[in-house]
Length: 170
Image: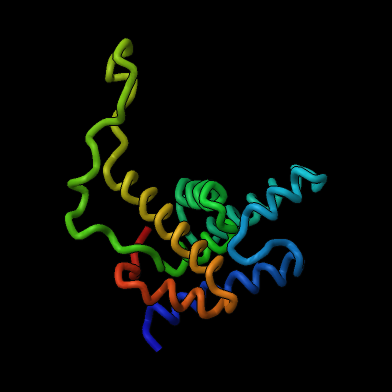
């Protein structure tokens, strides 16, 4: 079994273990939408906060920078992927490899209001832009695999075997 496949299955097992530690019906594989709907339909907001803080605390215990943990949690929710799965992908280092041309496609500064001076909006460092882009692409692609494939393990294997998915130090 290839190294990427082993990482994918480790991420899946880590996610399953996290679900067992919480509650079996806490989340649905690959979907943040069901969790959001449950919150909107009556689960207390404290439950969402508790879940977020538990993932952030575990990330801190693993030595992950707090900014990265918060970024991956927020991006996973925005991309419709369960943040616990996003955390496992980042923890195992499995993601979309950086583009071969590097950061050449990243702009130097964000577009700003023409009436405000540019010094009010310092440019985002290219490595942070690349990190966010890679998280978004990784989460989107895994979510699409999970939606298309009945077998969760096969979806993770398929994701890991895509040509531009590799180990990346987020």
